Each structure stands twice: as structure tokens, then as C-alpha cells.
Length: 326
Image: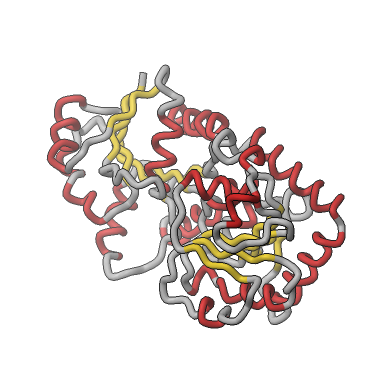
């Protein structure tokens, strides 16, 4: 039985990607791994000294520099890396953390490569994030739920879920919506610094919902038809496997983790970034709407992919193999 002490204090937020992975993975490995969390830095230090864990699993946070000196000598420090490694103001501390780490588990090959760019000798394993295929399922479809937001459920619904910030590029979503007044377009996410909503004013087919519960998001995904996701620099966007598991057809930018979660032409469609990108999104969307059989094919393939390989049981087994190999 391996003992792993988390160096991350749980946030209690359902949207916390790291907590979601930790809880879904290690709750399935109780026969081989004891995963322990502390509610404060002081509690983590006490647990480290008392339990002498085999591993301490952090996230590369600069605050971990204060915890590492209290780890027993036998405890190996690892980083679960959920983003893209770049130089920031905290870079000197981050260099020390990654140099000290015995191993890194990255959420995508894209994220792993950013680590290898700076630390080519570092041992980096790659495990994609999973999805709860019982929670995100086509069976939760309920077109009537959308009517209270002014959405016509009798029309095909194109969905975007994510913060409306520059990197997510919701303005592309709005530009495509302008070409399709016959469809309903729904943006779900906080406004951020985006100008997309201002550009959407006057478009009767574009709707914005700033906040929904996780259960409501699962219902909205199951009730929609196409997930249009032009976001870039995503290490492993959780909304992609959630949309796939919900049976949505994925139209996404071919970038970073998107290209690892979506198999182009098999369970989704990836669009290259170019000057003609909006036109390509428009063309693919038009083809899907005109060809129900093709849309159904992608939807079924997406759901099957999650049930077979992107579910949490499969992801947990990959994590178990990583720790056993260490």
C-alpha cells in the first residue's frame, strides 16, 4: 500500500480541476493507494511528519517551497501539472520546485512538452483527465429546461461553456452565430474581459447564461447539439470530455490539449488556426446541420470514446501504473 500526501489544500469548489482529478482518481484506488489531504499547511506538515508518506503530490505552486523542508527524507516529491509552464514573476521559485521534483504527471502531452522545454531530463508521465460518464450523459437531455432562458428548443443548439476571456475566443463563436440565424447559440460562463457579449447585442439567436450549477451544465450539454470551442492554449480542458460524454458533436480549434482529447474526423472536428478559421467553423457547422446522419455518427463516437477510455476508472488505472512504475 502506497501512501500519498497531497500538498494542495482542497478548495471545496466543484470547478477545481485538480481537486476533481484527485478525488475521482484516488477514491478508486483505495486498495493500493492511501491518499491523504490536509485542510491547512500546518496540518499537511503534521501529517508528513507523522505518516512519513511514500510520496508528496503537489501542483508546482510557489507555496510548496515552504512545505518541502518538512517532508521526511524518504518521501518523494511529485508535481501534478495541470497547466502550461511559462516564465512568470515566480519563475526562480518554480525552477527550484521542478528541479527538486522526482517526477511530474502532466494532463496532456502538450503540457508535458512545456515542462520538457525547460527541464529536458525530467521524468514526465502523461495522463489525460477523465469524465464521469454517469453524470454527463445524453440521458439528461431536457429541451424544456432551456426555454426559461428564452431558447427555442425546437431548433438545433450550438453551445459554448467557459469563461468569456480572450484566450477562449468567444468572439469567434459570436461571428459564426451571425451566419446562422436559424440556429440557437448559447454562451455559458462569466463575462471576464471579453467584448463578445457587446458584439452579440441585437442577435436574437445568441443567449448568455453567466452561471449554472454542475447539474444544470450537464442538462444543458445533453440538451444541445454541437459544442463549438475555439479556445486555444488549453492543456486539457475539462469541458471537452464533458461535452463528448454528453453526446455533443465537437467543433474545436486544433491546438494543444484539444487535439489530444478530440480525434479529428472520428469523434469530433478540429479546425486549424488561420485567417479562414471562422469560415471553416461555419462550413463544418453547416455540413453537420445539413447531414443528421453525420452528426449522429460523431455524437455516438464521442460518447463511446468516453465510456471506453476517458472515464475515471480508466484514468485511475493509468495513475496507478505511474506510481507503481516509480
